[in-house]
Amino acid sequence: MKVPVYMDYHATTPVDPRVVEAMLPYFTESFGNPASRQHRFGWITEEAVESSRSTIAKLVGAESKEIIFTSGATESNNLAIKGIGEAWKQKGMHIVSVQTEHKSVLDVCKKMEKLGYQVTYLPVDEYGLIDIDRLKHAIMPKTILVSVMVANNEIGTIQNIAEVGEICHEKGVFFHTDASQAVGKIPMNVREMGIDLMSFTAHKIYGPKGIGALYVRSSNPKVKVAMQMEGGGHERGMRSGTLNVPGIVGFANALELCSQSMDEDSKRLSNYRDKMVAAFSSQLDGVYLNGHPTMRLPNNLNISFTYIENDALMMSMKDVAVSTGSACSTANPEPSHVLKALRLPQERLHSAIRFGLGRFTTEEEVDYVVNRVVENVKKLRELSPAYQSRFAGRTAAVYN
Ligand SMILES: *Cc1c(COP(=O)(O)O)cnc(C)c1O
Image 1 (cartoon, rainbow, N blue to C red):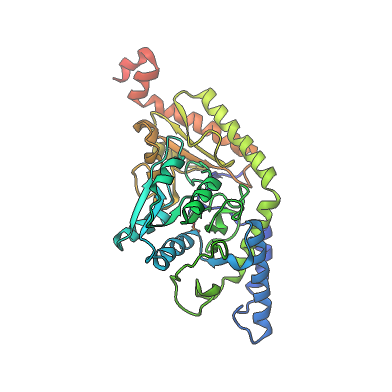
Image 2 (tube, rainbow, N blue to C red):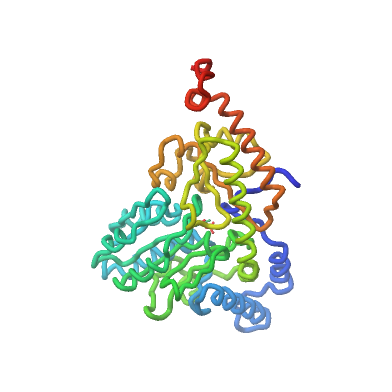
């Protein structure tokens, strides 16, 4: 077993060697610009792009022409929200989203507010779920878009997306979802779930970084999105710029591999996850699971080890790569906006650790991480006066 052990698969994943293999020819021999319609170099890569687009579309229940390639989920979220905002401004300037969304949704929403749009940020319960009645009431005649993520990147909670889709269609508003953590890990079907726009990205599913997609529904209803990148009119005019051919080929290959092993991976990883929970709670007290106990990603575990600081715990085990939450905001020592939205007691906010399991996680690694965490939580708690007075009875006097 190699250290450090990687258990941060929500931040990113290594590219599967089979994906690298599939991509390689498109860096060298088959390097043509797919927009070059006049010669064979272009035809070859156009064919590769279109076959990848069709693979990706099928695996999420879409049609090929509904898949717009972008640089990743951040760009897809920007394109969806800004693009709908701009195109449907005449109809209304109200957007509904959720407090626990990824920053690339929340920060775009903030930008929209600066531009004069009104945004309702739905609260969540202690498990991270939105209240469907609250969503219904938040939708007004001037609402144009609802943006609710499928699975949360910090706590793994999975929303009832089909229900959200149904409400949005009843009320005649567009439904966008950030499915970055869900696609490839749990079954996703844009038609069955009533999704109008869906962001997803290759690097969370063992594909390369810098390539993602936005699904944009083409019928019932046809969704019009204003382009946010002007230029050569690629991607049906919705996103200009020469296509990242190796990235697109890798993205399709990665998604195909995920869907082939989804059931198996999901069973294996949720077993590991349950084993970790059982080990932590039998060997430590003051351990709390964050997120929903059952409606959650198979590969996510977010746990508070109360009476320790999560930063201190991570520093004490540099041979284990875990995270306190979102990789995009770790410069900020504040507890994450997601945990805050759960309105948990203060001591749970500061002691939360996110474990992200993935394709290359082994049982040996799971056992190693459990042991390292238990050992270091115990050590840190020995130094914590608050813990000593709470749990250790008479010894408390020594520390107070
Ligand atoms: C990783 C992630 C993103 C950002 O995706 P990029 O491709 O890195 O831009 C957006 N939303 C969620 C939920 C994510 O997990």
